[in-house]
Image (cartoon, rainbow, N blue to C red; front, side, top):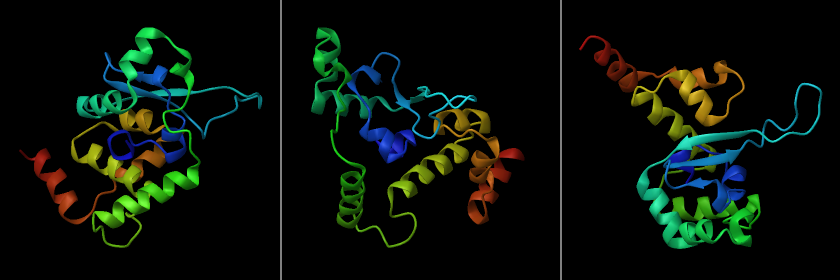
Length: 162
């Protein structure tokens, strides 16, 4: 979920069947960073992120998303993972350990979010689109992902010159 959507772990844990858009092939996350309007009043801001069909198929298989949506039952607005953020961090850590991922800043939930941003830049996604998907308020935050170095930078430059 984290690597395919670039969402924050708290946003993933709040995802409900209503916000899994199977037909549109996307997920709709409530931004947990932008909680108040310019007057300081509470508000909900959502962003839609396209995801691979295989992720949606897996979510449907595990949680029965399609059936819940068709029935419109009470589970429609219940989180898929009714767990704490600490639990989410623990699961990410355990999965990365089991996968043999080396230690470093990439071995975190935030590292998976960062991987999403880097992958998007490598695929030629425009900064403003990536900004929208990641929920950044300021384009300067998103531009960090465009600051590629080494092999990544050479790859980007090679695409420019054909």
